[in-house]
Image (cartoon, rainbow, N blue to C red; front, side, top):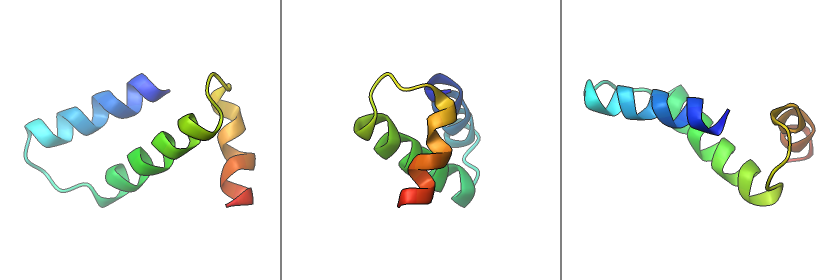
Length: 51
């Protein structure tokens, strides 16, 4: 999932298009990955609920 988010953000940047949702998703995903390294992507929901 991390790779997919990074690829999306890179593509948006290359096209010079705004993506507020993409930026928020990237920030959230980075914080989730730092808090739960190696966790399955399905753990993001409990992480967001607890935030």
